[in-house]
Amino acid sequence: IGGETAEMPGFYADGEYDLAGFTVGIVDNSKIIDGSTITVGDRLIGLASTGLHSNGYSLVRKILFEKMGLTVDSQLDELDKPLGEELLTPTRIYVKTILNLLRDFEIKGMAHITGGGIVENVPRVLPKNCLAIIEKDSWPKPAIFEVLRRGGNIDELEMYRTLNYGIGMVLVVPEKQVDDIMMRLTGLKEQAYVIGRIAKSDTDASVVLN
Image 1 (cartoon, rainbow, N blue to C red):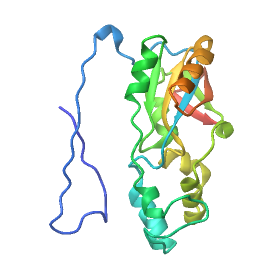
Image 2 (tube, helix red, strand yellow):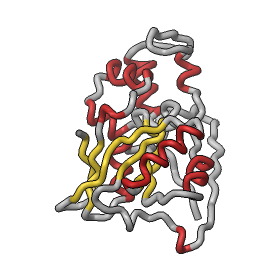
Image 3 (tube, rainbow, N blue to C red):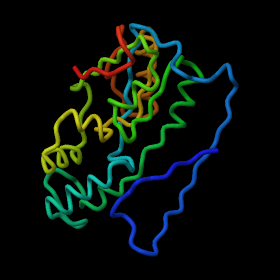
Image 4 (tube, rainbow, N blue to C red):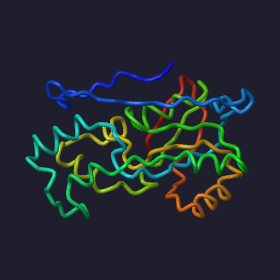
């Protein structure tokens, strides 16, 4: 009833295996958040990632270790820790923060920014007549992403399409609740940014990087 087959070329040697797990939750039908109530004028709040969040490591290894010739012990001026430690930074889990917000606020849609980045994950929660306009300069990009962008000569759009680029979760919320939600997030020690808004789309749901 769940799970996936991960494609990770070059990760396993002969005789090595990956043991993975997943969880299944239940929710009352009336409380399902499916994006159907998202409307023009709603705002997008981005919750900061802690780094790569376990996605894109095949590309990351190719850039850092093959193309740039670095090792896990490399100390780059841009990073405050050895490269290996940076790459092993645990993925941020947002469940406690989200549950806290749901007690008092309306969250119309949520997009977990994993493989596919903002460009491919946000449209999955939008109604067909909605467009997400993302303000690219509304949040700081962690240093590891800039190392990858320069080292791999990656196009800017590809950074938003392949990696989380500093945002691990996107919430779609009513405009009138934005200030209160941001205040709550600050109190929860969450790094959060208002990163965009919902506009009308004449075609399918999509994202525009502004």
